[in-house]
Length: 82
Length: 82
Image (tube, rainbow over the protein chains, first blue to last red):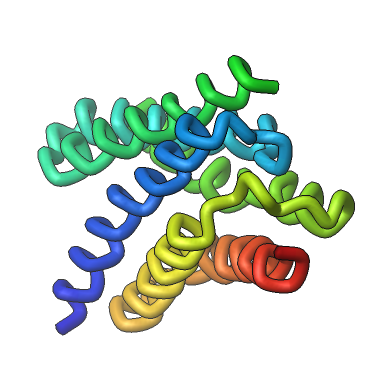
């Protein structure tokens, strides 16, 4: 049960930024998005990816490759459409 | 070094949504924020908090109490100012 909750949290944390990335690129409206928050979050998932690589933890690596991709798309949209 | 990267990622992941919550409430503009993304992320940090409580991991508990608070503020702003 505890493990299921951990895996569910990891899965949701991986996919949850896809709708935001989609919305930012489809609407070209990023006015309400905080650049500092999204840059810090990009740093966060990049550091988790680096940490996953260093400790050779594949679930951490796969999850954070997905997260880095989605958050990079959000940050790029914010910088492009501001 | 690896541990420092892990702690830095955990710290950044905790504080990174504070500017977004502040911006949403100060500007009352939440049009560009994706409600599905923020609801899924609220579920994510809530599940991590629950997981932290179940495995009695205090760094996980403290970090996710902060994250739940910030993301709850963002979701509330999105629902209030939409």
